[in-house]
Image (tube, helix red, strand yellow):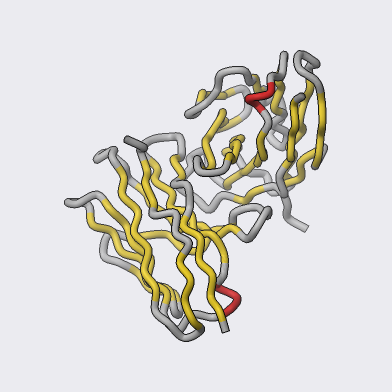
Length: 114
Length: 108
């Protein structure tokens, strides 16, 4: 089944404890991206990648890191999480190395930082 | 001013009604536009692309007005299953900009 998977789906952590949210797609898609969704603000793009080893900042990259060593994986790293990073996070992918195609979203990761 | 703005609603309409949403964008260089649908606490899913000449998909019609920098979504003959949040998406370059969404509730 073609899909985007994220792990974990739910995470409660404490300020400053490094964490990684994994994202994997099995569709051989080139474009991958991370979003956070907050009430009243909608989805905001954190980072995106147009292909392996190519990553760029989105709208709200501060406090996050990403890597794209393999085509299928695009992990999101929070080196020192803070409470203002409590949010619902979505990973997405699309076929070509541009955002102009349909975006396929993962199921979301709900992160709480205390 | 937000780069992409939508009326948050909620829009509460009876079954069978016609409802329209607008979305304005500030970057005149934006090239591509989409409407996504998001059910409560679920991932967004593509509803339809928006083409310059306007396009229709069943009960849904999307239109683009570049001069006034807005896109619209018209839903005819609303169904209970249309209840969701509708997200406007604008692509100014290689990144994506989402509106905060418009909440629609269709009631029996």
